[in-house]
Image 1: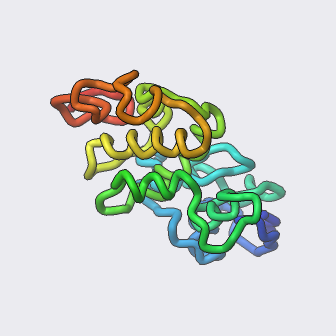
Image 2: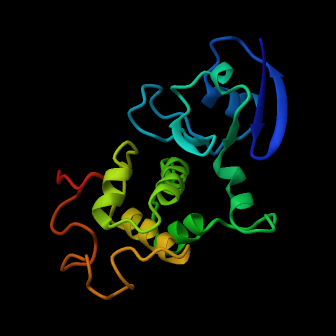
Length: 192
């Protein structure tokens, strides 16, 4: 079957098997490898992309369902970074993940970044708790989420939001300043 999808701003028309998942279309047909295949069961969020601006797990969407839509992957995020869409420009969320060390092995990072972009589009000034809640469908098996939450809050500030007040203000921060003290949290704040 034929699908027509705008991928990272470029219109494409491709022949695919009717049961092709969007994640496989992006990786195999489009050659966009940042969208990771983690679980194929919607559990991990490594395959998160923006579908018409909404955060979706691309392992749950058929390429045929995305036909006629616009998909943004991590590779296309730079075009959203500034008004000129300069090549090589990092989106503020990408910059914040880099500056705040919001990654370790990097496998979950593309999905985390894409989910964070959608979260900040919906709520430009989230609290740390809202960030944890907003990212609860994306799993990181390395970091404990402290730096990921910090990165999203830093990105919100960089994009003009005012999450939890200015950096170091103590407003909305816990004593350790890491989002959750004394435990390894899941994104929703539950300690493990």
